Length: 419
Image (tube, rainbow, N blue to C red):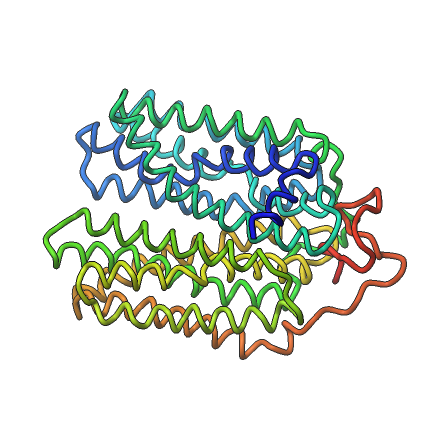
């Protein structure tokens, strides 16, 4: 199982690109909790902290596809590094003024979110030129999904350590400095500097003119909603049991399940089209959310949380392949960024929906939102089978991927070529 992943990491630049991307995304992975801790240290309330976190999240959701489109047009170094610097500067201003100067604090946080570099989409655009074969790229997508789960688990622990050693303000500064260094490592690499998007048709919708991509985004809005609702329902469950640490166990188990599922998914080759496979994975994901409504004892609930996470990373990894196949020519980074944005917006909607559900029907109702989100995602995929069927094979003239100008990829391996 580990041999395939080691083979990927031994490829030139692969380990550097993966590590640099994860480090570069540290501010995004830990920004919300760092902002909350900072505002609480400034004697601000949770409502104020929630406003700033929401502002940061909305700005990030808006900025990702816009910056992704800019990367497709102008290349990675010209967009990723300046964006990382501006985002980091926004957080520096926020730490400097605190909440005492709202006229500066709110714009600073908005700028930090808006200019968060689309490193995640950029990495997936680079994999074909770095790894060459389609099987290795698909395995890299699975490894990527697993790495994201690790980052979102370890990142908050890193922030709390920085807060314990120094202060919440110092933690915000450190994670953003580290983020800029991660982006710098990526954009100075050979593959990033050499990467060029394929010529694209001028269209204001960009990647969104693909019906297949729109269908996928619709489905993953609900997957994100399911995941976001679990975070709120998990807090309610912990309150029911009178122990805040229970919430940490549930979230850790969810991440562990995703880690196991992602590693297992990427360890083998899969036959058939990824569109059909994605429907099966999302169906299993939805089914595994339902047992959470049983809300048994802590040990059993922790096991159910792990089960609920098993199919998350495989669903994301398979979705990356589908995005790659359906993104219009010359829009691959933008398309990946739209998936990131849609998933994040769905998680925010799930968080917002689970709160009233818990107040109205208790913890069980909160977990019911997760199950409903999972099955809604499945229904979208089932209803859009026609637009999500395998795209037309590229012509001989476009047999190489847009990220593989040297022809390293296997014949027939496309990356954002279809219109």
